[in-house]
Structure formats: structure tokens, C-alpha cells
Image (cartoon, rainbow, N blue to C red; front, top):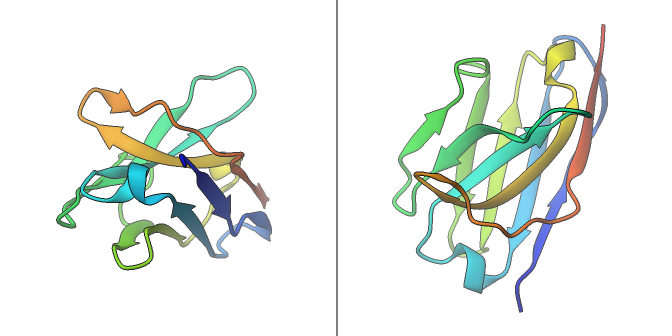
Length: 117
């Protein structure tokens, strides 16, 4: 069964932190890179961070130094630790399998992150 379940979003103030979690089915997760994407109304989803099956990470310039992606291969779960949040981080956050050319096409319901100024 193909499944993704994001959680951990919420409403926070500027400068605060959140930790997002994404539980994935083994079909999607095991042996593949995973990515966190975000989307705001009227805009395309953008890649926030990715992590390879071996743990190598990449980040969008806008979040470098503030966000950390990690994965627990035993739990088929990927995390996104978000520190020093800014209002421009407000979006719905999704996780999915990640390829060099973009997302793998599987999407969960996402989790809303709202940062107030």
C-alpha cells in the first residue's frame, strides 16, 4: 500500500521551532531519497530539503542553517526540524520520494505550518 502521512504542523510565532514528521509506507521509503516540499496558494510546490537513502542532505537556500532533514530507516519516517521560523515559511508541507529531477508523484495530505509575525 502506498501511503504518506505528514504531521507536526501548527501555528507558531516568528523565531520559534517546529518538527515535522512523515510516516511513509515501505514501498515509498526504503532505499529511496526522500524530500520535503512546501506549497502556498497560487504557487508551485518547491523543494525545501532532501535526504538520500544513505543520509546525504540538500537544502533550499532559503532554509539553509535553519532547517534539518533526517530519516529513521527502521521506522520508515522522515523528519524536518525547523528552527528560527519566518512568516515566509508559512505553507503546507509535504513529504514524498525524491528524485534528482523532482518529486516521485506520491503525495499525502500535507501539514499546515503558519508563522505569525
